[in-house]
Length: 261
View 1 (cartoon, rainbow, N blue to C red):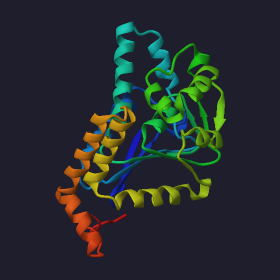
View 2: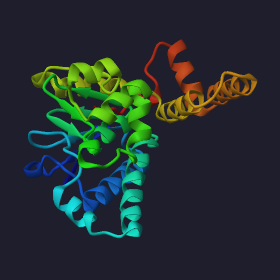
View 3: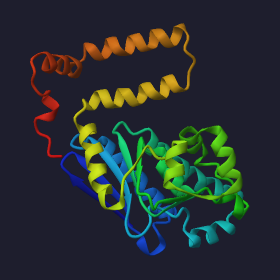
């Protein structure tokens, strides 16, 4: 259902239900949430890749799960939705940087997984669809991440039309941050991961928090003061002092000396 492998300082989490194009149900949602929490707490892991086994990244909700949901009460549906929302928030709020490796179909909730990751790189053959409207449903739970990734204007189109769009369009509107030929996709992911593990681990976590803070706020005196405090704090931290010292001394910082990736 879910495979977790470590390559040096990089963990690769693979959705492993290829027979149903990695569609998720309540069990996979719970498993993925636990795995991401564990990796975020693992000091040996510096970056996390999310991938899918077989011909697709993630086709969204498992049909059998959807059949069960059709008979659920409002309270049961709310609990299910909250579990999915928790999974997406867990991925989004990880201190470790995340990369979505996208190939084949990324539909409905699969688009939400792509959008919740910090970086998303896809093969040209990847296809995307926010299909909920054609099922009489709404992409409510994934919407905060997808709207943030593609913007309100494009969300209005693709949420409402439920069109299938390709990797070029996904890149144009910001859902994908990079593209690579299918045969070069793993190498491209590895190259990005290599850049990530070269950064200071505490700095990466602080940068992710910084992005959330400034993107949600207004450039006013409070934000200016907050950003000044952030840089002052990190400059006097052990990692900040090591980073500056290594740069001035023309050596690699301590956190890169045991890299296996």
